[in-house]
Length: 587
Figure 1 (cartoon, one colour):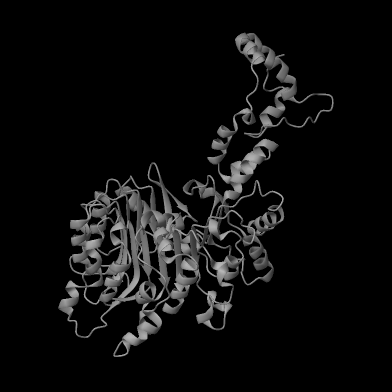
Figure 2 (cartoon, one colour; figure 1 turned 90 degrees about the vertical axis):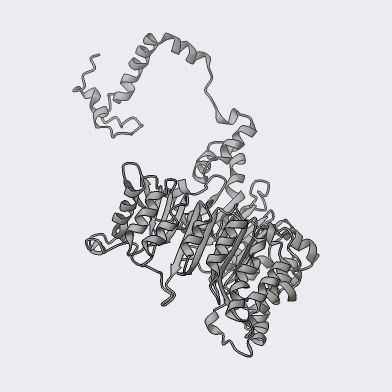
C-alpha cells in the first residue's frame, strides 16, 4: 500500500481534530476506518524494526497501580488534589476504599476557591466546597451515608471561611440539615467557622467534644438567639459546651465584657480544672465589637468600663481564667485599654513565651487624671509590656495611644529581640516612624499602613526619606502606602532584591484612570484592567516579583514581564503579606 496522504484512506487523519484520541466514525459501510486499516501494517513494521522491543513486550506484564503496597498507594493519594482523587476512586474498589477517606478528612467551605487557581492553595488532603449546590449535595450525602460507612467517612477538620452567597442560615431546611451534619461529626478535632452567623445549636449537637482541640468561631450576630442579649450563652444545657482538651481557642465579635466572662467560663473552662485548662492552652484570640466613639470619658469612666467594657479586668480577674503559662500566640482586638491594663496582662500571661502577638483596634485611654503626659510617655501600655517581648517572631499592632510611644517601642524592641521576622503596623504618621522600623534588621515581611493624623485617611504624601530609611531591610513581602512622592517608593522596591510579594494600598495606588476602561472592558476584571499598567510598572522595577496587588487587584507575574489578573486568591495573598490575626491564619 502506498501511503499517499491525498488518498481517501488518509481522509480521516487529515480531518481529525488535534488532540482527538478516538478513531473517527466509518462513514463508508464497506470500508474500515483509516486508523483500523493502517494499524496492523504499522504494528508489523514496528516489529520488524524493533524485534527486541517485541520480545520484551511479550515477557513483561503491564503496571497496575493497585498492585503496589497499600502504604505506597496511600502516600500517593495523600499528595493528590480532590479532583485527582475523585477520578482515581472511580477505577476500582481498592482505590475507592483508600481514596474516599482522604476526601472527607478535611473539609473547607470557601466560596472564593477557584479550581483554576488551586496551585496557590494547599489542595492535597483538603476538599474545598465553593458553591451552594455542592454544599447542599455534600451535606445530604454525608448525613445519609455516615452511619453505614463510618469506617470510610471520617471528618477530622471542618473549616467554614465563607458561605456561598445564596446560602442562608435563616433557611430552616438548610439549617436543619446543617444541625444534623454537626450531630454526626463523630471524629472532629478542629472546628473553624469564620463566616458570620454561627449558631449555638451547632456546638450543642457536637457528639464527641473531648476530641476537639481547636475551636475558632465568629459569633457576630449570634444575639438573635435571645431577646436578652446578656443571656445568650445560658439558653442551652451548660454541660453541652464542655470541651476538655482545647489548645487553640479563638472567639471574635463578642458584644461586651459580660459576654467575654460567659465565653471563657462556659466554653473554655466549663467543668475543666481552670489551672489545667489554661496550662493546656497554646493559642488564644479574643476580639470585641468595641467602638471607642461610643464612650463618654469623665468622672464616671471607671464605673462605666467596669460594667460594660473593662475587658482586661473581666478576662483576667472576674473570669475563671488563670495564669497562661504555655501560651505561644495571643491576639486581643477592638478593646479599650489603659496603661494599668498592661500590669494585668503581664501578671496573667507568660509574655516571654509568646511567638505571635497581635493587638489590633486598641484604644489607649488615660483613666487617671493625675497622670501627666510625661508620665504616660514613659509608662504607656506598649512600653510596659516591652521588656517581656523577647521571643516575639510575628508582631501586629494597631494601637492608638494617649502619647505616641510606638517609635521608641520599636527601637527598644530591636535591642532586646533579634527573632522578629514579620511586622504589621497600622498607625498614624509620626516622627521617626520609618527610622524605628529600619532598626528591625531581620524583618522579611513588612505591612505598613500609615494614616494621616488630621483626617484619619490613608496617608498619601509620605516623603522620599520615609521610604529610603527602610530600604536597608531585606524583605520578601511588602505591603505599604502609595505616595505622591513616587520616587521614594521606586527606590524602596528597587532595593529589595528578595522581594516576591508586593501590595500597594491607598486611593491613588492605581495612578490616573487609564483610557476609560470602565466602558471598554465591562467584565469582572474591569478593576484589574484599570491598574494593570501600574502593576507592570512595578514588575519592571523588580523582576523578582511573583505577585503584585494594587488595591486588592491581584496579578501573577510571569517571565518576560507578563502579568495575569487573578481573582479568588485575596485570602491566600493576605496571609502572605500580612501578619494576620490567628482567626484568619490557616491552621
